[in-house]
Length: 500
Image (tube, rainbow, N blue to C red):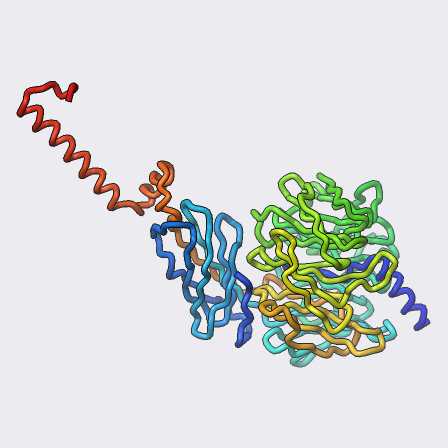
């Protein structure tokens, strides 16, 4: 029986790959030297530029203060473009540039929740536990009551709610297991969903609607997506897409639409309000199972790694077209994008024949043009990939052989190297944090960039902000002087003012 379970696991993993999951999404990030528990409310200010300031050219330095060792993300027009970390005294600065014009600059300070959560399974696949990891020091299961026995629900994938401290589980290790609801704040075993859920579903990683009221769980054995009412923890209905195409995972886009990649290389776009498919994206991949979205609703792209080739498709969301194809050099199963939308992290996966294909590597690319920035060597093949909310750490679950040593690698995103390897008791699933437990603060300032270029429209915009008050005063003085001259000349020479 034990041997059968190992074989079943390997076949299931090859068929679905998609345990490798991204739950988080994201100037180069800097690692904090003194990581800490998230405070109730971090602070952030912008001291430069100042309100209404006029700056010539398009280069400028943004600076301010924040809670010490806190990630600060800068955005304008709803798109993040830079990130940094405040120092031990709380000071931060970023040298950057933006197109000329009126700029509304927002600085957002982000701190992590205290804990992340992950599941483990025993070497014989008989015991599943829910564990927690303290982000500040990478301690596993600190405090009483941890780990938690899953009480037969067998969670392995844990997806966080966007509105409270609950999770829904998925599990492709045991096909008969139904999704289960877990409340981390209560530290009790997950509760299996009730109602007419399909039997033997192989329910993989799903996604919540933005209001947290529904959870979409893909059932890979039966070719459907089950919709779960999270308030009652009950099955509501099943959806099919693409004439019964097999959906591997489900993702919530910043727009609120649900995106469901499939093993035919298509991505189905679902409207959660009408529970209907509203679009299909033909990626050109043979298989797709993971998607990478920016956190910004206005950011125009998603990234779709091909599971059957060493390629990533860059897809423009406005018309759902693949605008670029990048050859990454590794079979890619999942990824993450930095908070400033500049660095794309892609984790190696498994090839179509089931052989490991650089699953012990993370490739770091430019999210703009796909060029390789670095390659990170992990301690072993990874089955889970998660950046923290502030992007100061990236966790990769390393199961090793099911009867061997299991660890979680901790990646430093500034050096793109392994800063620690944390041993865990059992075969580790993906680690995840809950975004509702983050602590954030924002501040905004408006200023004018590129004033020296001085087109008429730019001058008008500057005048509207009061940024060219001296020039306006000078102009008024000139008008008065010319008018006075004309009047005096008229009185002196009695010439028609019109002629003059």
